[in-house]
Every structure is written in C-alpha cells, then in structure tokens.
Amino acid sequence: MENMLEIDFKKLTIPTPEVAASFSKWENDPMLIPLIRPNSNEENLLARKPVTVDDLLKRIQHDHTYLIYSRGELIGEMDYSIDPPHVYKQEKGTAWIGITIGEESGRGKGIGYQALQYLEQEIKVQGLKRMELGVFEFNTPAVKLYQKSGYKEIGRVADFTYWQGKMWQDIRMEKYP
Image (cartoon, rainbow, N blue to C red; front, side, top):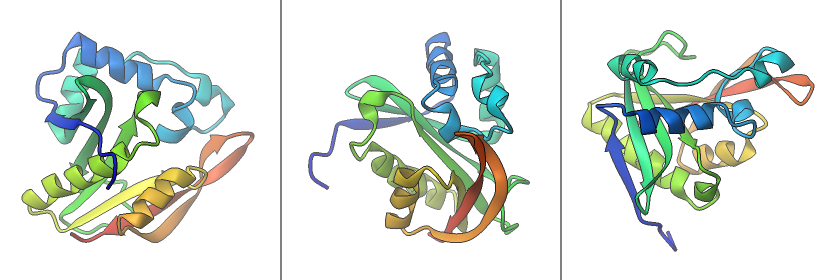
C-alpha cells in the first residue's frame, strides 16, 4: 500500500485519564456517534456520557482492546471480544471486532485497513476460528473496507439504529482466518 503512515498499536492494559478522555471525546463526537453505537431514536444520538478509567478497566476485563497511534498521537482504538452473545452466527471461537478511528486526522488514510490487518493477526495468534462484525448500512466506507478485506455478508438486523430521521439495518459480516 502506498504512503503507509507510521502507525503503532498498543494493547490497553492500564487505562489512564488521558486515554479515557480520548475515548470519551470519540464516543461523544456528533460525527462518530451514528457510526459507532446503535441509537434507538434522535434523543439517543444526542446523549452524552463520559468514559472513565473505571469504564475502561471493566471493558478490558472481557475485551481485548488496542490503541492506535499515528506518529505518537492516539487516534483510535480497536477491540475484539470472544463469543459474545450478540453475534449473528453463534459459532464457538468467534471474535467480534470493532474499530474506531476517533481523530479526524486519521480518517481516509488507510489506517483502518492497517488496524484491521493487525487485529486479524492478533485474533489468529489466539487460535480463534472466525471473525464477525456489524456495520451500519449507511457507513459505506466501512462496508467497502470490510469487503475489500475479505468479509462476507451473512445477514442483516432490521431497524437496528436511528440516523437522519429513520431506522437503518446492521449488516453482519464474517471472515474465517
């Protein structure tokens, strides 16, 4: 890939107030809210909740979370959980994955692609047999990224999230390493 940026990934083991502040900023960014969490109505899109160090400590007890750095700046995060109850296809050894490029400066530069490759490698090392993810149908850049990376659509969850005055589907995709 041309123009590969200097990207580093670091497993989150000890959350700091600075990391919590970045997560809080991303999870409450009006541009990101529709893309990273399901919302049942307009009010949910506007809801704001700070992310604390304690929240992150709870999260890393069941999720494998990695920080994404570009030239030393924290720009995003990615994670996977093993066999969570919300997977579309209940198959033992499934990693449910998620990626958020939180900083606008990191978007549209191939960082999501690099992050996905790294996360997939970590999942393979763990010996997991399958990866699944959900992506809102209106998030076409993410859908294209996952298709380009070999993910296949396995189903859709209707009326999953609210955005721009209507309910949208969640596209579920899978890949076998």
